[in-house]
Length: 424
Image (tube, rainbow, N blue to C red):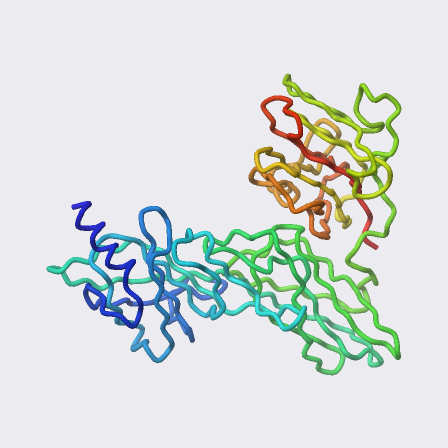
């Protein structure tokens, strides 16, 4: 049986859309769930990309359809014989992939004009196993699930002299993969508000963002001055949800999206190092019972200033900084990882006190979820993002971890210019 399946997939690999496919015309019946509830309805898609995925989770064929190919919710597609998985993406015309890539490398992106990101398309996806045989007819029901959320924002009491009102949703993923994980690329979606007298409202579709990750703001003009106000928002933005936000313009505070330049960490640039046999001043160094070291570097290995730190082995280097709950901060951690073989993570925590962290759901946005390795020179691991301290947070632990099995020459990471700044 495996030989038959493999032979069928070989045929799948070798065909292009314009070539004859050895297989059977199959009916695919589409349905999806509406935003905000679980009711089924007829999906309204303009384009549909269909991928065949082999047993190694790799894309082996791609077909493209439009709304004109869909008749009464049903699409007829000629599918090759064998068992494999079908992946469908609706309403995402710009999909980056290469045949032979894994499913996770199918990237769904925000539309973009120049440097400005627009709201997401109404993207729906599905993934299911199919078995196509010569002797058995089949109709497959394809359940499409939304990969976007809808944000509805309403502002009351907008003064008459305020004009050019635009809504901005910042620090949302600019690309996600097929399974919904972000790719650590972020952007700002900008959309004009619909203005009616002293009220304004906007609706937009966006990729998901965790609790405290995204920032809502409104930009506007008064006379010849451009200004910004921050809209309080701490909810998570989950797929297939409608999130409603209502605020009074007069109650919003003016603010920005970046730190104020005052570093709340002590010795965040690692320029003070009183005893070179120990960690840098104001930092704590944990060896985890293995070979590890924190070495002072020269000016040729720094992000700025005169010195940085080179971490080797298995280490935790951290510092706790006092914070205020429901207040927004920008975290910066510059890392240069020259080796492709050395593993490390940034791993920060919001804490109730210096010995107790808040639940993991609050800390995931400020922690690397997988091991990281080589970088292209110096990078700011948080990519200019800002984060809101959750309720109950009194401290933020800024921590970097390395996972070397032993100290090996030239195996390690350089770190410099760590900071925590209040966003005002």
